[in-house]
Amino acid sequence: MPSSKITNTKTKSTVTLPESPSEGDRQSLKAVKAGSGDQHINLIDWEEKARAVLPTMAYDYYASGATDEITLKRNRQVYSEILLRPKMLCDVSYRDLSVKLLGQTIAMPILVAPTAFQGLAHKDAELATARAARSVNTIMTVSTLANSSLEEVAAEAPQHLWFQLYVYKDREITKELVGRAAAAGYKALVVTVDSPILGKRERDLRNGFHLPAHLSAKNLSGQGLDEIGSSEKNSGLAAYIASLYDTALTWEMLDWIMSIARLPVLVKGILRGEDAKEAMSRGAAGVIVSNHGGRQIDTTVSTIEVLPEIVAAMEGRGEILIDGGIRRGTDVLKALALGAKAVLVGRPILWALATGGEAGVKECLTILRQELDLTMALSGCATLAEITPDLLKLPLHMK
Ligand SMILES: Cc1cc2nc3c(=O)[nH]c(=O)nc-3n(C[C@H](O)[C@H](O)[C@H](O)COP(=O)(O)O)c2cc1C
Image 1 (cartoon, protein in one colour):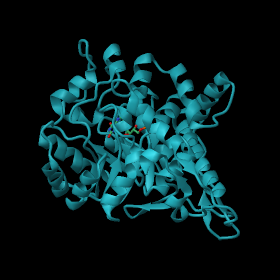
Image 2 (cartoon, protein in one colour; image 1 turned 180 degrees about the vertical axis):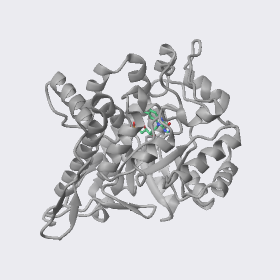
Image 3 (cartoon, helix red, strand yellow; image 1 turned 30 degrees about the vertical axis):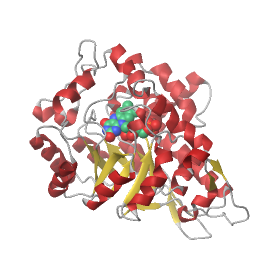
Image 4 (cartoon, helix red, strand yellow; image 1 turned 90 degrees about the vertical axis):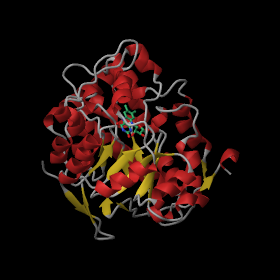
């Protein structure tokens, strides 16, 4: 598909514009827009549109958090408690949002978080998300529990992928996934450490969550572990994880993964400074501050409020990324001001995928980028390096 280039006459820099959506995606996006009677203006409105098109079991699986969903709400709430102190008269006529992560320069500090089972949202599943990530020049993190195989996804966006790893009790299975990700050209391994067991997601329990017959955890099909079936009075996913994931994991597991991985390793699910320090001392390339979007243990700290502790513990070593509740450009700027190098977005990508496929995800990422760009301009920042902590007034509980 063709892409077009424009040149900024002031800086002589060339910007590659996103490729145009495929005809199929254009149609589905048009249908949704026509149905809802308006255009997509922000990431928050999108959820309602997705809710209208998704079956309850899929919507609930995507939307839910653990137990009372307090962490889920807190992830958003604390962003609204952090206030901005914008700077004036700073020449923001040209703004650069590009960022270098693990040696790779991408267009913006906004990445796609790993989310399982994207086939529940759209027939093209992870393939559509990968194409969208590539077209806006950012990175998609592909879940172990994708509905497409990691090789199929790599064929769509070979330069723009990280692989998220869940550690199976059977180390051979884990080792094979690590080897396949490297062979397929993934640029990093994201090891999720907050899920030895699945959190208690009550909506999934009520719905008896399982994958429909046409979908599977395709990365595990070679081992015959690709079926997420139903489980009586339980979530099929919870039963799957309870039987196959390693609950005996310790920091030695990370040593082992790094001994077999030919890729930089990011540790996802860190919520304490000591854990960030431990990850770095064992040779990780960085951490992702995450509470799994409030889906694992409820009433935890929100990610943004724990970020300063983690930044301090990292002492300038390695990459720091954060996810959880990021919906607005102002949220991204606040995370960067507190020391994150980039953010990841989970659920909004699924809502966009459900309603508009590849074009929807592209639009979602573009809207968030535009909001960050606007927020930078209005707070006196021309580059990401100029986004500093003095731009924020923190609530008392974060001082
Ligand atoms: C439906 C869904 C599935 C997810 N699957 C995974 C997964 O397979 N692996 C993983 O590390 N995190 C997974 N996560 C957590 C996300 O990577 C991320 O931490 C979280 O969604 C960020 O919060 P947000 O949705 O508020 O942006 C999942 C989250 C959701 C909502």
